[in-house]
Image 1 (cartoon, rainbow, N blue to C red):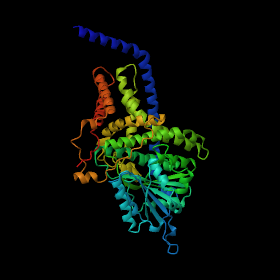
Image 2 (image 1 turned 30 degrees about the horizontal axis):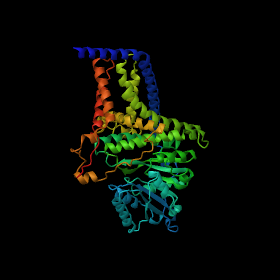
Image 3 (image 1 turned 90 degrees about the vertical axis):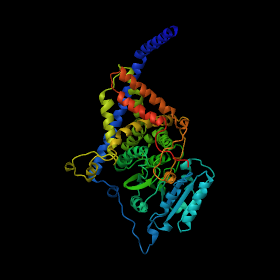
Image 4 (image 1 turned 180 degrees about the horizontal axis):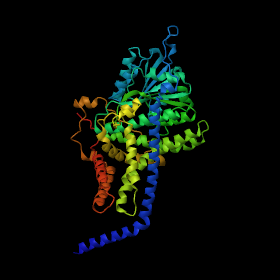
Length: 546
């Protein structure tokens, strides 16, 4: 009896404390947070609508890079021989790339370019001696076939990829090169890659960079890779295209691109001050007045991370690095006098602030923290346009960017072949939209955390973990698509942060279903399940150990 009385008394005290703190503290704070999140949602909404309008006009007008800039194929000259072709350096940075090194080296050696006008540079930072030996043997094998390939190593990994690329540019033979093409270890360019990109640089002296699009060879490996493809398609089809066509600026993707070496040097070369050395170089080159071209119809095959651990590390780097770079370069961009005020505004506000900071923060803070918390505080109301309409429109605009999601529009109303192509009947991934939304919200937890780490320059700000590539390892070990390992210790799977957020969302959903009036519980339950699935490690694929 006494224990029951004590429990009742404790419950009463907790209820009293809740009532005393809710009105003066929680309600005002939550209202402010709702207003801030709504403002960020509107910013993201305007950005998405703007880019959607621009990309439609670009497609309607048929503005292709070949029409916007001078482009003429390099012609063979009997008298001049191969001298009409500039000398091109191919850089392939590697780090313990056991599964994919043969693919990338083979693709680079298969490029259609005169053998005496190309130098292939394999920058091997591997710490595994066995892998180093295999890569060196592969380079010697191609060298024996007459390919001008250099195997370069260094005695440290200072600067990671940026350090390797910077060190590679110091070799004496690089001085004879005019351009440098960069391919990560899992990238496989088609033979005509240089023939389609170099003419932009030859005929347009103001262009510093030609960037190609990524094509994912393992997008159907598992549900997680399909989600990644849907997100990255928007980046390549919309964001890169808009930046290239309207401002001649976009973030270099770090691979599948060709740089004018003089522009690279003028911008200050490679720097390792952030984990996005590619974006850093692009911004600095742009501030020098150089232009960039994105060739969306030129695709380079590569691999998506198919393990959740690898994907989380990648997303940490991709979210932390831009935020940290924004902090370091915002004042420099504002003070720059070589670029227009409009371009400065685009780089600072649109490219960095909205896409690299606001987009991550509002997704997690609003939909996974603030909105669920309002079920306990009926005094705080989120307008329907902010809770439903704006996120729905943003999702649709994002979805239209991926070729996996087509929405039916009567073709008789469409004069543009691109829009007719997009209006084909609903494609096979339309049913994945809900999974995609939930998965993106789960990943927003890591992206938001990484963004704050970058802005505050906290402990993991310069953490660099090379994204694991599996190549054909899964097929070789399983003989089919990657299967999940059944014998994995539960402790190796558990992710406490995801489980904690999932538990909170589930509690909010139960309260809303029992006592609330918002009817958010359906979303809250679905989102909590997504966090639980990620928290227990049932995302992505697992490599069999034998």
